[in-house]
Length: 489
Image 1 (tube, one colour):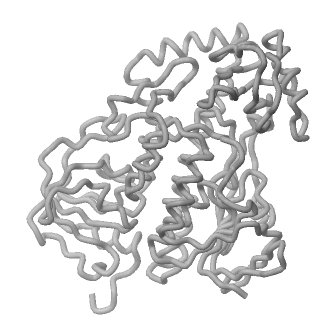
Image 2 (image 1 turned 120 degrees about the horizontal axis):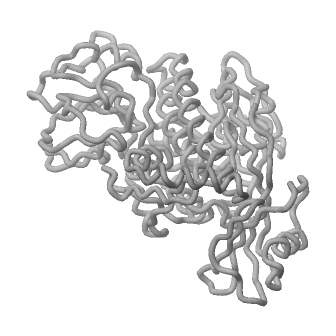
Image 3 (image 1 turned 180 degrees about the vertical axis):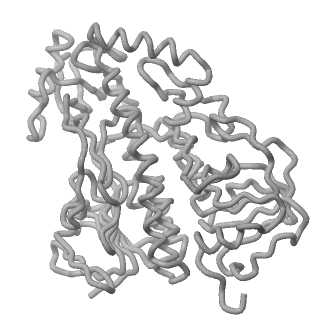
């Protein structure tokens, strides 16, 4: 039986990001993916927001994605674009890049780390015991893992087999999305009506057209056909534009569900296996990436034995509330796509409110993910938030804060007198960086904050402790996040 420390079921964006995090932490990880390779066959989702780009920047690979896509301001609430170009981030924009390209780049990256991917194999079930999980596959060759993570989508077999509930909202509408050819000139742009949103644009090859349309009634669970798409277009535009030769056609709904737990023993969930929602607002890939970087370092430390298994409970404690906020946004944004008379009245009020700068910043922070704050208790405004990407001066020369996270390792940034803070008992796990920074500390949405003397930064880029130059409570933070002091420390 082939054995790994962690087996991930599902090789989509969340699964690959989690695998990358574990591989960087030197944990033996494998992905089981039923597709024969990383090629999707369709483009699917169309973008990632600021905080997601920052996560890739923290690992030193953001440029690979930026070179393949286009930066735009498209974060919307109602019909208003929440411009975030003035946010204190190196990436204050959305990256327009379809999921097929995202997955291709991700696949190339994890191959370099490397990560073992079992393509063309499907997980059919599992059985867990006190020491690990036996993973059953379609080819009859079982795998053994200390931990199993389901990144296998909204219909997750892992979630269902683990007995984890998936409460939420039933669908109120369905949409068709497709890439097709048309004999007539397509109607460019976006159209709203009492049913929902409709739009089409010509793709790079100049032949195919990407179409999104809201169906007049909620579609069945069957695979949609070209006839379904034709009928939906005729109902909205009076013509189907001679639609033909579909590359792919898919259906999605506004169903919104959130797992009641992210863990059952040695089985965990991430990405769409833990939460589904309408793609409105482009939250899906970002939520999965944030799950992955939050879970990755915690699972790695538990596997290595440096932290107790109870650290895994903080994954749900932190990610569930943050994801719930994002799901609330997608529900609201989906409702605002219906332009009947009553909803238009609401849209008018929302448009007036979003003209207020404070409201614009608040909503842009939520949409971009830059406002995420994990509840680590009372204290400095930085506590629990993402570490700003400061331009630091160190003994080795100028360094960006995000560069210090390229290996997915935590660090203590000491901006006071060198050697003032002693982390010797954790030196095998936490890097110490003495540096200078004389600029302003700015945080998205809230603005300027008091400059700290020292910060402890987790591998996911979030601040775990803020100091005033003394080591008060530093040992407690180090123990909580990176395990007890080493023997003799």
